[in-house]
Image (cartoon, rainbow, N blue to C red):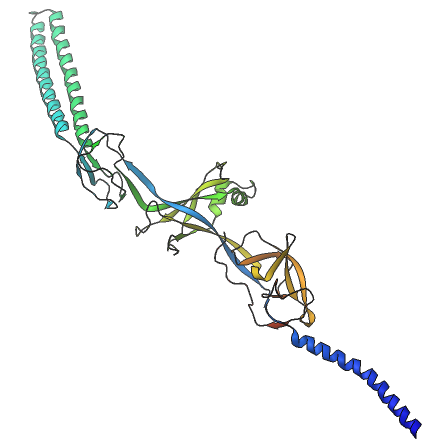
Length: 386
């Protein structure tokens, strides 16, 4: 009986020794699962993405005209104010007209005298012709009267030219707007002596405005497909661009890039570019600054948050959630363009892959088991790219 009890005890101990590791294994696995950190995940999908390259720009009127006098004289009247909108032909400045008017009067008198001399010479020539026909005077005497008439006519033409010049100078004393637009700064006041070198003001025709900005060699090469496509064809195919004003708001009208300089600035490595924007409300003025937004469209593209990636030795990785919610570091490649918040993935991921979007570089590591929690299903919408 004792032997049987001993054998039974031994059997129980042996059985317990076999069962204890099994219970411990199940306990460790449950404990590991319970301690798995909860991290947000997203399911990778494809979508159409539009990136916007942002470039600083300065605005100019399509026809900014320098207003300079064509004569020397004193300003007697300034008819407009800084910033005033004027129409083509409207009077802007008046220069002293006293001496100019006197020159016109003198020229008119000279024309009158010359005309009288022509009349007299014409009468003499007519009379001498009659006398010549009657053989009363010689042919040379008649020719002399004809020559005198020709001289008088030439003097009349000269006097008339002087009158035209005097009247033209008088007209220059009234400076008018060559185009409609806004008046710039007027630094000179009435009584100031001005010359043809004096810049009275600038007149900006801003019915259409131009945004002037620079694009670098990289963008230029992309536009021309490394020189395989003509720049003219590249411009024609470019999408409309947007303008962000200095206060951060978007200008309501779209613009079109019309020109790219064929010469690259050696000091900046960029080419000057211009885009036309309609300005029906006169909101834009010459000298305004802003940002040009050039869109680039990508079709059926995978986009993920930059925060979901990490970098090792110039290679970029993400953590893909595999079987049993275990993390696997996966290398990816991304496009050079980005908006500062998201990456466009060109390889390494496929639609349906699940990646973590938090804890990268902090909690996450290769082989870690996590508890996935609801997060983003796609990357945030792209706003702009530098």
